[in-house]
Image (cartoon, rainbow, N blue to C red; front, side, top):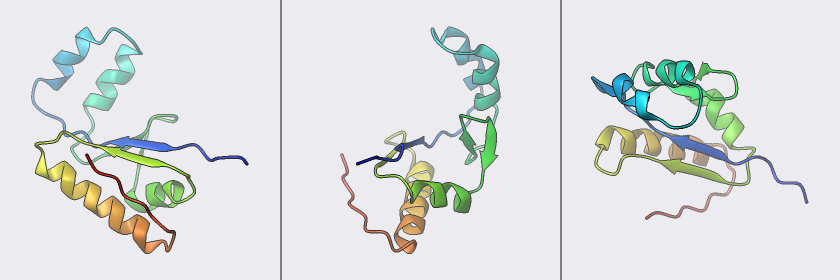
Length: 102
């Protein structure tokens, strides 16, 4: 049985001074880290291409995956609301969902 690649989405909100913190990341491409850190709040980036992805297109791709993991900063209500949008859109595809929360 072949499984589709799982989506892992971490909803990140840009904050003042965030780009400066990226200087200390021990791994990865620094230029790419700055570009991702400079994205407007609420922007979803396809890390394979570096392009912004609209919610509908992202959900369509997620609906094809066997596993979708959504993460967030636990104390950020805006990110939790974005997760709710994603879950509602996934539910609207008609595909059965199982939700686990921590």
